[in-house]
Amino acid sequence: MPGPPQHQEHGQPSFGRDGREVTARRCPAPPALLRRHALPQAIGASSSTTPRSAGAPRKPPPLPAWRPDPGWRQLPLFDQIPRDYSRLDPADADLASPWLAWAKHLACQLAEARGWGRNIRFAVNRGLAFVLTGYVEGDVIRHTEIFVPLRVLDLSVGHIVTVLEEMGIFEDDSEPSFERWLAERLEGLAPGTRSEAERWTRVLHEGGPRILPRREGTVWLYLNGVRPALLEWSDRYDHLREVTRDDVLTYLKALHGRQRHSQLVALRSLFGWPKRNGLVFRNPTSRIKVGQYEYAVLQPLVPEQVDRAVAAATTPATRLILAFAAVHAARVAQIGTLMLDDVDIGNRRLTIAGRVRPLDDLTLKLLLDWLEHRRTRWPNTANLHLLINNQTANRTIRASNHWISAAMRGQAATLERLRVDRQLEEAMVHGPDPLHLAEVFGLDEKTAMRYADSARRLLETSAESWSVVAASTDDQR
Image 1: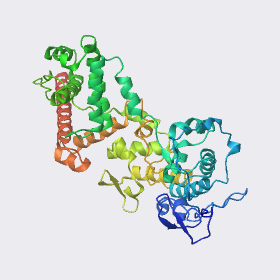
Image 2: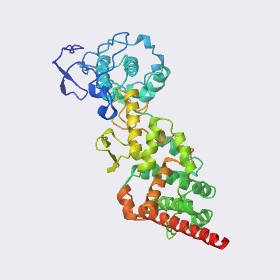
Image 3: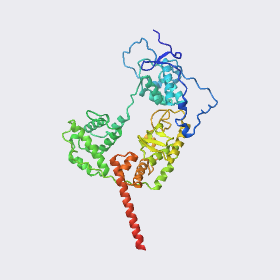
Image 4: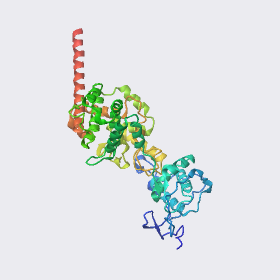
């Protein structure tokens, strides 16, 4: 039977990648909600659209299409042979392919949903024509096959992959960054020790029977913490079961403070896992007390450090980020996850990590400046996160922690130091009351007690200093 036509008229049935029938229609023009900012009244933006400059007329959107009907076909006798896209000339792309018509229709829908600009749409259509040339039903397009050829053509791999994933014909066979990092960290260990440390690390990362997976950052800290000890023991031993309690105590003697605390915790995890699974006869870290870590007294920032941090914030985004950390004591991750709905300009409210806070005059002004810049710079973005950049404006993900903290990196007053200084200032101004700190900033009880204790010590030290100065003045008189 002949397959269905490549295109269809409005109102006729079409099929998505899951095979379900949907109503076909032309891909609509960008809705007004995506062309204007979500809060135009708050920033005084006009509701009228900016007239287009004179130039070439915009191309019409592609006609609706559906997944091509393969009809009858011979099943392959062998596995798919990897394709060499580097030998394909872009000028020889098959522009009449029904797979390309379907891909362009899906790309148009994704572009409207994610706010892709004109240049991105053109690059995505060009890349789809390149990778779908010669494609037949049942083939799989792999990441390792298309990454280098698309980069040579200076095309956006991520956006093209998004369309291929929507079509259900893409396979990500790239090596995860965790695997590369793990191989690098295990380099230089004895073979037996390497095998046992790798199994322990994978259990931490992926979980196991009655073991929940840890966050990737925790896994990195644990393996980086035990690596110096494993390298030292690999010169004498081949397996972890040969390590004795004296070896652990000798290694820990050279460590002090927080370094000893963190590495002993990681070593207890390293030897506790093989002991529970019968890989070692005894746990050499048992009965070695970690002890309670003695936190130092938190110190406030000096005005010069804060002034240098303020001078480093030169863009609307960095100024707003600075205010979130220095005024509202927001963490970097909390700043990155803020959404547009978390800002209530009319009622002057700001929701950070589920806690509603009042908007002060400074933060309100910086927020309005950023919203105006955001609306002007990315008028078509569909990203609902408050803070976006060039990499996230055309997607729906949040900005990275690295980008958020980049402006303050290298400063004495980093975002984390500013956050701590704000909470310490609250404890010193309103009194070292842990309940007040927990209510205002949503702190854990132990963290609130630490801030209150530091504030109490600083206030006592300040009072003692004033007493000494007053006594010296009286003696001089």
